Length: 77
Image (cartoon, rainbow, N blue to C red):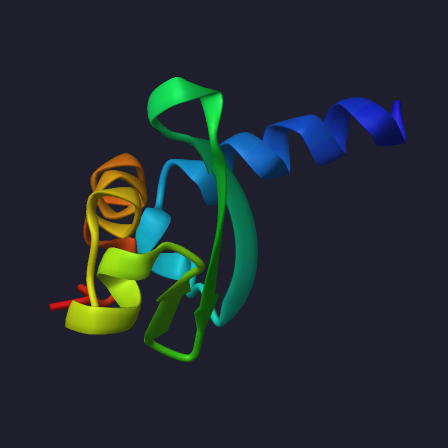
């Protein structure tokens, strides 16, 4: 019975995404030629291990993750 209550509470929280704040996370994205890139987000600061990000401070990999997460994170640009 307690488990069902937790599921309902989770649905309630998920219906109000403004409750959620991302501080830190790490993800992997498979780019061209199946090359895997490692992306981190730490208190609004993005990082990717690709050369383009190192030169410009943003890349297609970070922009893809931004699109996946929507307005829940600060943009890399």
